[in-house]
Every structure is written in structure tokens, then in C-alpha cells.
Amino acid sequence: MKCFKCGKNEAVQDGLCRECYLATHDLVKVPDYIDLYVCSHCGAISSDGKRWTDYEDFNEGLEESAASRISVSRGTVITEEESSVIEKDPHTYVLKGHLSLKTGPIFSEKDFQSTIRIKTSTCPRCTRLHGGYYEAIIQIRASDRAMSEEEKTEYEDIVSSRIEEMKNISRDIFITQEEEVHGGIDIYVSKSRAAKSTARYLAEEVAGRLTESKKLAGRKEGEDFYRFTYLVRLPEYRKGDFVEYLGKYYRVLGVTGSTWKLLSMEKGNEIKVRGRDAEKFKLSAKKEDSEEWIVVSAGNGEIQALDPYTYRTITLRCADKPGEKVKVIRLGDELYALPDD
Image 1 (cartoon, rainbow, N blue to C red):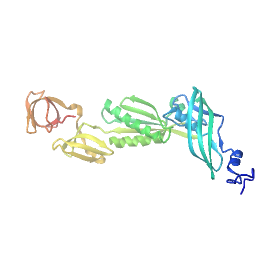
Image 2: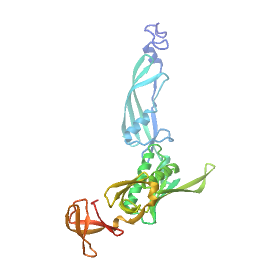
Image 3: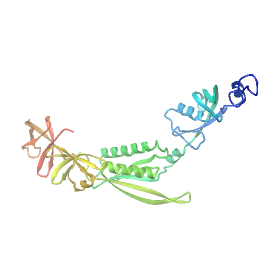
């Protein structure tokens, strides 16, 4: 069948030959100007001012966002696309590119160019972040003791890492504020569900107790708006401390999930204890209670060390080859040499 328009060439699509079809059909629509919104605080990009996306590379973000504004006619697919952006000034870029297209049996090529106009704005996340918005507080407190600076840093890192992972799911999840208060740390989180999940995760990691409370903070879109507090109460003992368990002394090596790992001070082997059984732990000494003794002699798995208080030479078992000094811990009526950390 011949093309009904030119009558010369063979028809290949909708009664038209390739040349006539391409001449009468606008397969690609590229706006002369593409307006994009860029957050002045975080650099996120939006093509409509409503949906925002974070990009590691700003130019790649502009290119992807602008290219999304290119449309093709129904039945046409882009088989290959090449594009790039060129900066003219901080608020103006040029998008250039090339498209390979397929419409039915017809293959075609298209060069395009458009001017990108940058409009500075503030994304909803940054509006909330800089406005101090939060829906929940994660409170971290120790039981009957002060938190060490090492613990504060460790637990802040756990919470921050968890929230950072959740940002990949929703950019509306963020930490508004972190502050040290008497007895611990308060971390303000934008979304209550994210805060609850993170607090539960932290409690499991440190074998702590999690309690939840809420307080009416006003009304939002005609409904009561509550702010939640998730309190993670740390156990009395921590990594490096010494506990008595079932009549034996152990050093706390750490906790994974709800399982504690302990080192037997008598036998030197490691054991694992379930979280619910950890209630039977009794704190015997803190890690900073260890003393530094001078080694007098060593051999056959034992050392003779000088007690700094009585100046008596005491024989102790020591698994490691000691240096000139050794750390010793007093547990009940017993003395134990500690391996190097």
C-alpha cells in the first residue's frame, strides 16, 4: 500500500510512509523553558515545588529533573537518551541532548535544547527543620549512674545512623535537635513512628527498657496533635563493668540484641546470657575501679605483682604475657589480673 499523502513511498504507519509520518507527527515535546526549584538550604530539587529530591551531584540532579519534563507522543518510546547541562549563570542552565525514538516500525533521531531557569525556594523539610518541628523525643538515661562521654557518643551515633537510613525512605524524617540534659541525652525527631522504631532498636541493642508517653500539643488539620516521648533506660552495668551472676564473677563484653556476652573471671571463657536473665546480674565493680599494679615477676601463667596499698607481693593468674604493669580488679575477696584491652 502506498502512502496516502505522497502516493510515492510505501506506507508503514497509519497509512503514511516514514517521511510523511515524521513530517506530520510531533513525536517529542521539549519546552523552550524549564523552571526548576532549588532549596537554598539543602540543595534539593523540585520540578513542581511539591515533590523534592536530594541529589549527590547538583548538575546530575538538574539534568534528571529537567529531562523528566520532556514528553513523547503516545505509542512512541525513547530507546536511547543522551543529555547534559551547561551553566550560563547561577540561575540559568542549558539542557542539550539527543534522543533515539521508536514509533511502531519507525526509528528516528531527535536533537533537543531547552533553557533551565532556577528558582530559589525552601523545601518543606528545611522549613520544618529550621522551624524546630518535631513529633517525638528520644530520651536516653542511665539507671543509678551517670552516662560516660563514650556512651553518649556511641548512643548518639546509633540513633543518628538509624535516622539517616530512614531518610532514604522519606526525606521528611530528620533529627531536629540533640541536647545533653541532666542525666542523659534528648534527641528530637521529626516523625513519631521513626522515633519509636529507633528507640526500640536502641533499647534492644543496649538491653535497655523502653517506655512511651504522649502529651497533647495542639490541633492539626482538625485533629488532636500529640508529641511522644520514648525513654530508653540503660542498664546499671555497661561494657567493661564486672557483674556477679549465679554466684560467679564476670566481665561484661557487650550486648547484641537482647543477648549479653560475658567473660568468666575464674575460667576465662565467654558465655552468653539472654536479656531476661540479665535481671539476675549484680554490679560488682565498674571498669574504672581497676587498679594498676607493678609486675615483679612472671612465669607459668602466673605473675607476682605489688599491691600498691599494702606493698605486699601477690600471686595472680594471668593469661597474657604481662608488661611492667598489669591492671587488677578486686571482686569480693578475690583479685583478678585483667588482659590488655
